[in-house]
Length: 67
Image (cartoon, rainbow, N blue to C red; front, side, top):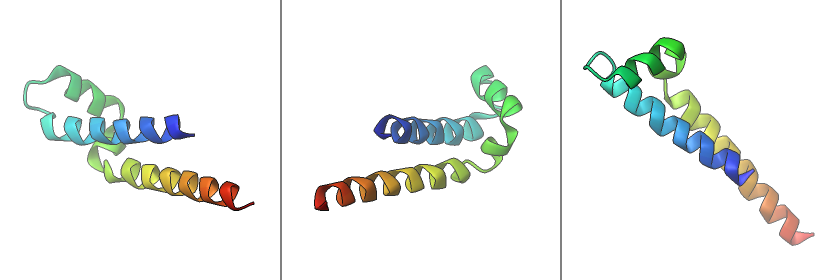
């Protein structure tokens, strides 16, 4: 689950960067935003999901240690 949290944080960074560089001569950003327009328009959706995954992971580890 930690790997999933890491991937979601990386995806958040990717979408924030792609939305910043879109239409500025960076082909990777244009292609990313063309295929995932919703996430480029609102990269905070992925950030919120990453925070939820990290919180669930933290809670699960805390509860496992108490039992």
